[in-house]
Image (cartoon, rainbow, N blue to C red; front, side):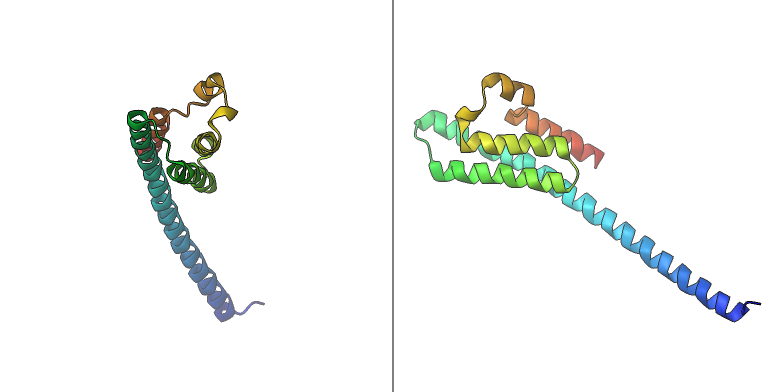
Length: 133
């Protein structure tokens, strides 16, 4: 025969564990939401930052290789961050954008059009995902 006091203590311990687990799960969801929002906002910022550089490049005709390096790394980092957060489609597009800044001649225009990596496309997709988050 089982001891009711032992069963009650076990049940109380189990319920306490479940409560802590649920509280941790809620915190993890909140943290993930905040991280996702920040990553998506950074996509919008990177798109605008890139557009500003491209406008400057068009006006001066003088490439700034240090700036292009920063843009390549920024887009690449965004790709990794979005992939970690499970936003794989946008992550892949950001990775392509980063690779494009490393070597603009590695992709042809048709591939880039199909990949939807224009700055406006990236910003639009980030804003759509922000509404869902």
